[in-house]
Image (tube, rainbow, N blue to C red):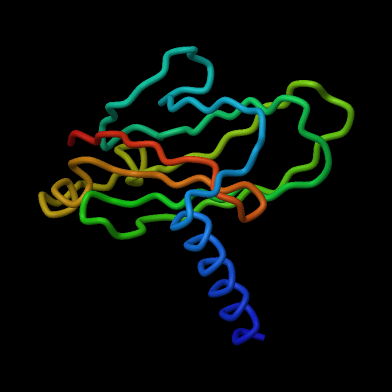
Length: 145
């Protein structure tokens, strides 16, 4: 069972790398903005370690079932987190979804950050976005702790 999951994950990564290497981009009508708050219309490129970082999507004329995957690369160039969201759209001209990255448990959980953790999160980040395994785009953002 675990072996099958590993094989499927490897195939996904190979397909994703192939799409990136050859510059292929899925032809989908959408917009995506980065925010720290879903209620706010303010787009951001700079975030704090305390922020929740949202990718907020608006899909236009997208129908059927889809899988949205994002790979969040930390300043060291390593995948910090992956997010996946499966959704279905029926008869809607405009449909919104979102994904997020939370860098820490935050003060509300009572954790204290070590300097090492803050250093690991500070810097230029990258997120790569895929819909149904096809590359959509890359977005850069900065985290300042």
